[in-house]
Amino acid sequence: MFRIILLIILILFLADRGVFADEKKATPECIYTSTAEVVDGKLINHKEKIDCVEVEKPNALVSAFTGENAETTWKYFWGTIFFIMENM
Image (tube, rainbow, N blue to C red; front, side, top):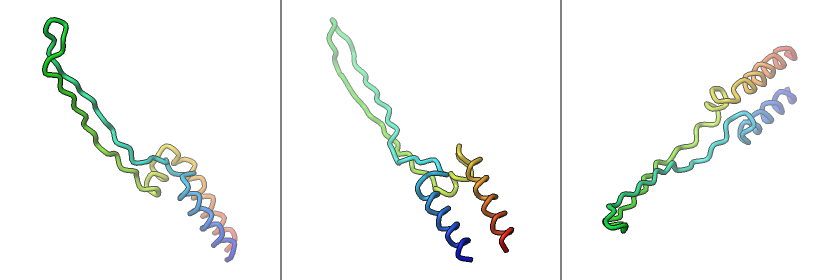
């Protein structure tokens, strides 16, 4: 029973560290636009605009089972389940 609890704690620790999940931080996606009129080689009415949309970090458990590294997660998941069943 003690080994099972240690395995569960180890798996939760690895999932929290981003070993299984895609580790993405919340970063803004920004688009820079600039408009101006050119008269005699000079810029007139120059306007700059930056639009940012913040991309949220996905849930660690959801991204672990559906992200790019889902294959590894499922291997560890089923390996743990079979290990627990074998030792019962």
